[in-house]
Image 1 (cartoon, helix red, strand yellow):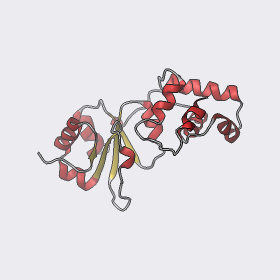
Image 2: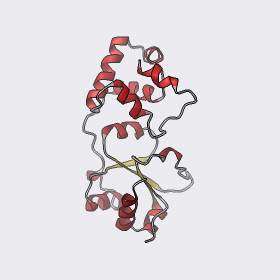
Image 3: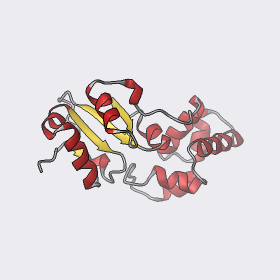
Image 4: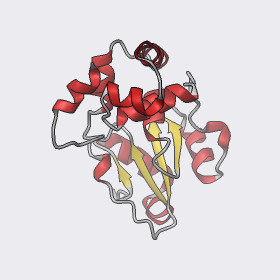
Length: 177
């Protein structure tokens, strides 16, 4: 079976399913389709000269908030039915785009983005002009809304899958304090 070169996933069945649903020729011509659980998606080189639509299959709010500022990416839930996927991709039916279950406030989004940059807590406090207790309250709310058990899980999920490579691994521990 001929598979598309524009579908990125570690899951062979995902690639086969999407290629069978949309045809490899259609995908290669108009789309980049990314399974967000793909371990090397940061290494994907999207050619900016091409007018291809980037579609990310995600399964949770954390992935949405992590990727929403990365450019023109359309999100769809991994649990969508084939008919919903076709409607979303081909007809651009917004009824089937990924729906965030727990919305973060603007301040929580700011704190999350600072954390994603690997900033230490004192740097975040200074940049955003908040007190330590306020930061901890926002971080707790982020974890509750995104259903993450503790701060170590939050940081490890944030920096897993090569999402943010840094020269020094110590910043993760510094940031988690």
